[in-house]
Image 1: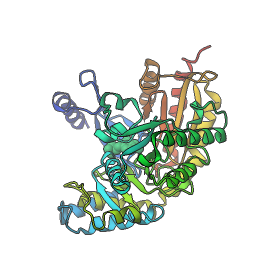
Image 2: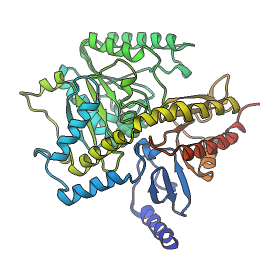
Image 3: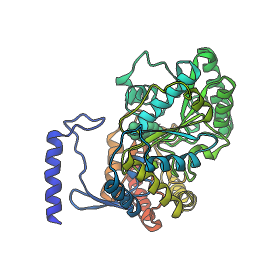
Image 4: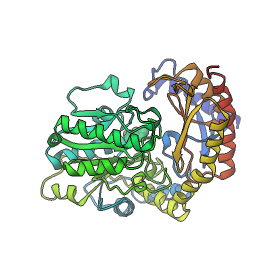
Length: 447
Ligand code: PLP
């Protein structure tokens, strides 16, 4: 209504006057106002309908305003909004039971945090105390969070301004076949060479000094580049051999996103610690956590764990997690995500790759896909350089928005990351808009 639009404009003015935004130069920033969101639809400040193919920051895995989760939060709010972390709370106990039952192996214990970055930080703290070692290995082309240690673990330009020479983090080159750092031309070659590189780096840094290897099971923001066959198993074998903890960062890839409950479930790999957030409750209330193995747990049986948060296991967040996980199960959303990837998104994107010379590669699984845009298919020169945007990419994103799609874009990529329960027809409508937007990208391909 006109009143909603007027209220949105007022909110925009107040935002620009008083709200300080993440990652932005505050001056030129022109955020979008959202008046309303429901399922896989959002309405902008002028009341225009957009199909949400971003899931915001890839977190609303069950879509917006799922009625069962909204009701569970309301019910919990009526009962008990908050309680200190040292007390037992039924919502927290049940959330921990459900999560421990879903994660692989003997990751039977859950430490709750407020989000993903602190989950990664606590996983590292646990690994360091468990092993008595300091160094942490993580991949370039990764994202692990915005807090001090998490951003230093991150292998993305967002780290540069926050670099701390004393964080104990060593970065290694990832297995990324499309832009192989190892001159590989096949998946097998990439897997073997990337594993050799990591093996060498661990040896050269002193395996006995390495507490953990932190890896996104499938890297998300950095490009949804799936590890080649054998790579994750190889990393698991390598870390086990040296008594190094394997920390799987499942903050973005977890909770059904990839068509399995966790991305590590695609391989025969059980990490020592697993960090989660986002999809655990679709982000309706901030929540993250670490699932830890029995062995890591034993380190803290008789020795206090030196860490905590006022809101660890917050009842509203945990009630939302319980309702989210139950809704995902009752409505077979993980199976549906797998089907959407196999029957709808994958075929549609591959067809677009066939038609549009600007598409360098499409890749993904479940509801987790990336379209990599290039100026030249031979040289694979990206449509925006690593670490930045470009006027050309901005035009592609603008075409998506004006066509009625809310996209997730990073550097030269458009990610197709819809809710696991998006309606098939709506998804196809959104993919058709992407198809048209790629015509704009084709215009920048070198003749
Ligand atoms: N790890 C991964 C893989 C992520 O994608 C993110 C956020 O995008 C984080 C960690 C950080 O999570 P948060 O923003 O909740 O701190």
